[in-house]
Image 1: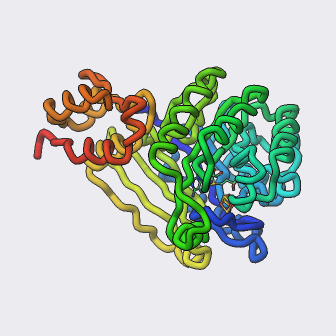
Image 2: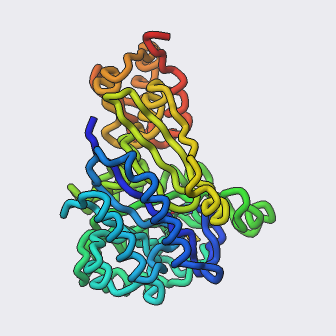
Length: 385
Ligand SMILES: C[S@@+](CC[C@H](N)C(=O)[O-])C[C@H]1O[C@@H](n2cnc3c(N)ncnc32)[C@H](O)[C@@H]1O
Ligand code: SF4
C-alpha cells in the first residue's frame, strides 16, 4: 500500500444550474467566495494533522464551477496547502472549468498559480444536445475553447462528455466523437446521462418532454466510445474514463485505488487509510453551507470502519478499473474467499477475467457493472468470520 493522499476542494457555485445536475450546487448569485474560502481553510487547518505522514499526490478543485473563484482566493488556498504539506513538482493540481470564457481566468494565470491540469465540461459537440442540456455553449464555442486551451501553457487537460441524451442516436454520438480525431486529446470522461430524482430532467421525463435512452442504444454507445477512442490512441482505464498513456487522472486513481483523501467544503467526502495500524475511516461534511459552517471547530464524527469494509470498498471502486483489483494485495490485508463455482460461471459468460492474483471485469462485464460489482461484494467470505 502506498502512502499517497489527495485534497479535494468543493466550490458549490454555478452561474446556471443545469437541469440534469444533482451535484451539491447553489446559484452563484448568492456566493460569498471570501466567506467560503475562510471555511475551507479552517477545515484544512483542523484536519491536516491526520494526513501529515502521507505524500500529497493531487489537489483537485471541483464543483460546482471552481473556476468562478477569484484568482487571489485560489492562490490563497494553494499557499495554505503549501505551508502545511510538501507539494512536489509532480503533484497534479486540477481545476474543473466550464468552457465559457467569462467563467475562466486566462490559462496562463491559472498556470502561474500552480494549476497544471484542466478538466473541461464540454458535454457535447451537438448544438441540439447542448440546448437540451441547458448549456450556455455551442459546438463552435466548444471547439474554439478547446483550440484556445490547446495553445495554452497547460498541456494536461481532460474533456467531459454526456451521451444518451433524449432522442440521441448512435449516429449522432458517432458524429460528436469524430471531432475528437482532430483534437489533441489527453483524457476523456464519457458519462451516460443519469436522470436523477429532484432534477428538472426527472419531471421532464415523467411528463414525456425528454426520453431516456434505451438499453440497446446505451450499450451501442458505450461500445462505440471505447472502439473509437482506442482507435485514436486514447485507452480505456476505467468504466467512464479514457486517456493517452500516463495521462490517467491521478486524483481519481486515488479514489479507485481506495487511498486516502481529504475533502474540504460542503458535502465533500474524506477517507483515511492506515493499513499498517489496521485503521480505516471515512466521513462527509454537511451539504449545506450553513451546516458546514456550524460543524467547523466542533469535533467531527469520522466513521471508523472494520478492515473488512476496506476490502469491500476496494472491490466497489477497484472493479471500475480496467486492471481490476489486486487480489494478492487485498488478501495480504485480510484473507477472504470468493465462491469458485460462481467465479467460473462469470468467467464462462465472459463477464470477468481472474487468476489467483487479480480479478477484473471484461467489456461485457462493464456493461452490467452495477449488478456485477454488487454481487461480487456480496459473495466475499472473510476467513476469520
Ligand atoms: C462536477 S460536474 C461539473 C463540472 C463543470 N461544472 C461542468 O459542468 O462543466 C462533472 C461532470 O459530471 C457530469 N455529469 C453531471 N451530472 C450528470 C448526469 N446527471 N448524468 C451524467 N453525467 C453528469 C458532467 O459531464 C460534468 O461535466
Ligand atoms: S453540470 Fe456543472 S455547471 Fe452544470 S450545475 Fe452541475 S456543476 Fe454546475
